[in-house]
Picture 1: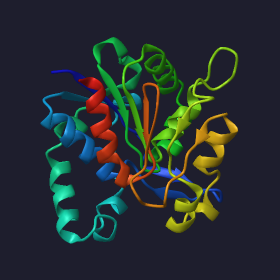
Picture 2: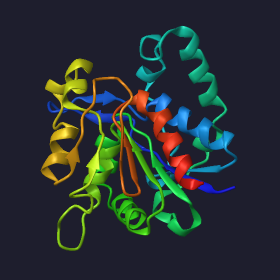
Picture 3: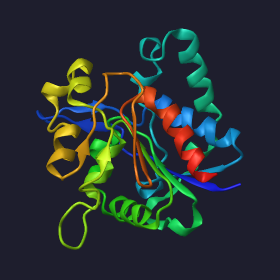
Length: 231
């Protein structure tokens, strides 16, 4: 059994372009689907957040319409209740990468607020990438890659191919025109190549030890890919 580190946003709001605090957090399916897959495979999960705050689920991610109906929405909500590690996170600042076999970042708009500018997370990502251990990041989670800047000022993920929440999806989700910036644009500006799939359909991109997913539907197949790499 290996230990897998879940790095989760500690933000419960996302600051929009007009200064409005939009309620957010982590996206339920993106935490639940990988958690269930990792636990079913016998691995231990440890959650880390900035400052060790208990992370907030984005209430929108529990709605029936984003979970394929009320039955599955109820299942996700119940699964979240049993994800006890979310209620006792460790401090991201205290994490020792050597203690973990793999690292995973779920999304939600929360990472756009805190992990995108969190230097501790950025250093952890850079070390994980360099170490060769499986590194999985999904949906808005790749916002955290923006904080992984090397000593020369360039992004350590520059030249990598990734999947991430796309401009098209942000537009269809209704928040693109209110956002300070769009994830696909920022990653591209940082030298990261964003490979886009169909909006809302599962789309996973692998590049060396980095495994990324475009949207909530990509979280389960991403987890499968990480498990293959753990052996």
